[in-house]
Image 1 (cartoon, one colour):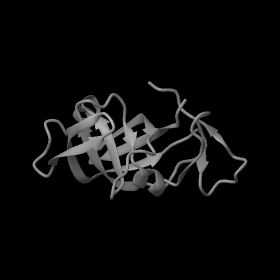
Image 2 (image 1 turned 90 degrees about the vertical axis):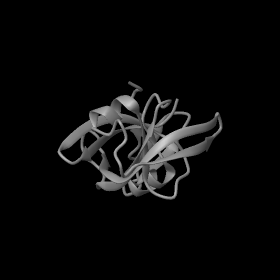
Image 3 (image 1 turned 180 degrees about the vertical axis):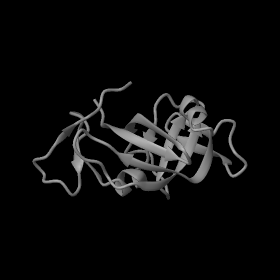
Image 4 (image 1 turned 90 degrees about the horizontal axis):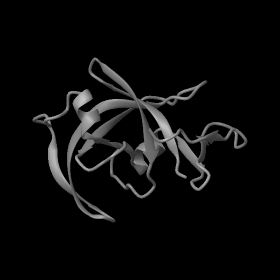
Length: 139
């Protein structure tokens, strides 16, 4: 299993909800959400806008070409009864991604505390330790 959470992405006048994977191995210097092409299209970010920067990420599977759009969306975690604060984040477009991926910096900014990756358990850092949430199902 893994930890997946429901995110609300807000960019300009577009708001969409997605299920995203908390990826502890996705290290970034800024809060970043990697998104597949279909979500980039929905957010009117494909083809990449002029303010995007094409770069190569080194991954366990080898080099990955991505486009980074700095500070391009507000993101928050939403649950059935509470949500996180909204965080301004970079969107990273990947033609190979099959689901949105939350970087370590974005997970920290959203105050996600993973309790057990194997069981898919998490909570917000500000919640009591006994308030454990189950992972969302992969879409």
